Length: 134
Image (cartoon, rainbow, N blue to C red; front, side):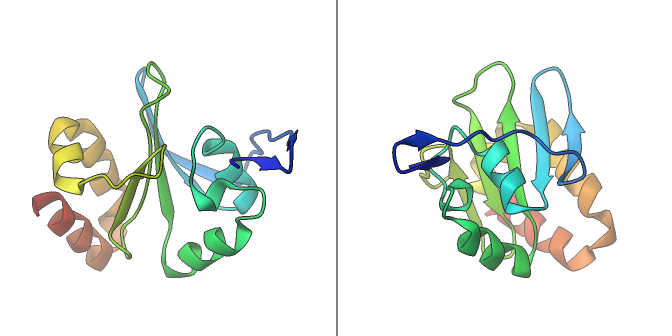
């Protein structure tokens, strides 16, 4: 389904101020979508419920508990991930579960970027670090 409504591809464009880019390198972008429209843009090539045209209810449900975080590889588009720390959920673009510890041990620069972003929320930081160790 993706960002499609029926058989018609929706025109989704990035809207400034509807996301926060917390890390941007030549290879990776880490972004927090602040709106469902932004989640649709960043997840447009995924199978995530939060990125469907009708998935606003899912986006809102997660957002009430904390931010969704999307990781996009600029070189290999199939490397697209979404995670939600509070619910301990981490998925690849096909909506298959990813293990926090395995992923972030392979990408320490991304782990550092998330940790740097979470410095002001100690409880969330500790939860994230626990996920990366288990």
